[in-house]
Image (tube, rainbow, N blue to C red; front, top):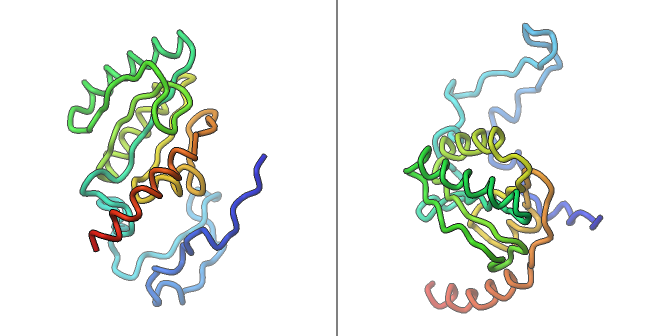
Length: 183
């Protein structure tokens, strides 16, 4: 197993917390169920912005998260075709891409992709996939930095596939001059 990346690559989860909230110590007091911890209310008494939108770094104008659904065997391919159809019928507001019969880009086996734009869509699709994915492997990721998302922030439902990260490195190297010129 590869060594984890240095901690400096990870964002500090407390960095954007309001200074008032950060000053209130958390207790070990238990909630009514006797198991979970009792959490203090937020300063503003509202739900987190993360329920409605991505307040930090995730680009929602194109899509915030995409889900790559992988299939390798004949049985997986058959199940994935059914899943692809069901997603298109169940979530017509989401962007669903073609059903590949061969590996493409950094993906070592065939896949299809579904894009979500809001936390609500992400949560709905994630729960749906937990219920219906079977033995398919699924890789949700953001679109902020493909290489970073497929390495440091890699997330998997089911067994992971070793992605072809050289393809992503080449893509980012080609994109860097264009991004600099656009500024």
